[in-house]
Length: 250
Image (tube, rainbow, N blue to C red):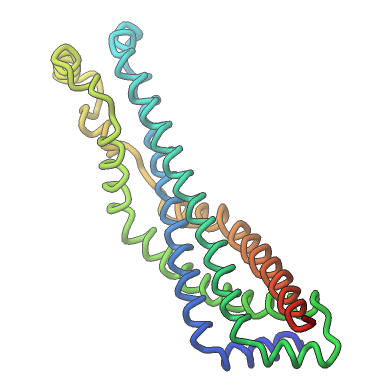
């Protein structure tokens, strides 16, 4: 309890650093949540595409072989792209916290001297700093949780359109050949299915559960966020305090 009371008092005193930390964390985390939602939308589109293709007779599927392969390759590429972007965002959180904490330590010389004068160990100081940033993380996550709900319930259409644009931009030219276009047009003209080719490409045949979209994104990212905060703050604090003490002894 003493840790928490001291952390709250410190956050109030270092208000500017607290605001910057919360704003930075919230920005990175909402980006990660959006990417997680995009991955789910793209996965649903990829799965739905293969299910829809299965409706066609085997002969038609053979005729569409190159098209199907191109679609599958593009779906896999888009999913990989979202995964890479999420990794970069996680790395951004890690580096952001290290930089902010390092700058903060530089401006907290008097506090470090007070801790050292009372015999506090490096581990104790690192834990105290972690408690402060953990509270900031919780504040940022509450903000992100609210923004994520709004994004899931009111921005799903925008996310679908963003994903479709990204998917279309990466789609190979094999689908634009005269032979392929002619075959696809004649295929859907015969109305084998309840949907048309444009709807299939756009993922309009996919029904998304907005609540599941949001809760899955939260579940997949929360412990990753927390792990990054633990590693970045405790690690940079431990190193930073050791460096400060070393300089004090010179």
